[in-house]
Image (cartoon, rainbow, N blue to C red):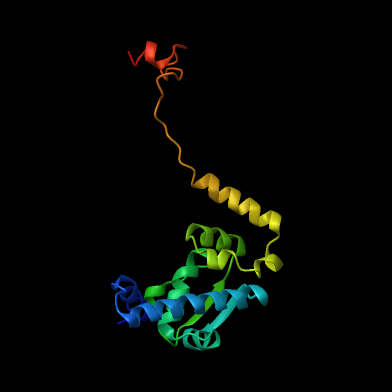
Length: 164
């Protein structure tokens, strides 16, 4: 079974056993430490063999595959997770603005709230990204209200025109 399939099977597992809960708690902590290191050292371009990078970030291969699964939408390059093996050479070109946005989307407050962000993205830039995120996720209704102008263009209220 490929590393990616092993990671996906862990995700799809019920998480009811203590071993599964411990695995995911360890994963969240390892992910947090990896992002701290990336932000602190400004590691926006990471290269190497998957197993060596996993060891460098103090993760096993499957946990690192989960990290790659989470970060892949924040990369400027494509990453085919299905084909990755422990000896695969990988390159991660991290886009910090995409990364922050995607952390907001994942509701990962333990990641977008890291104080290491202060050194990488200004408070103003983070506010802009939050604003964009909020605009992109605003609930919008295209339903015509009875007191709105009629969409037919008559100038009448909908309730007196097409809504009658």
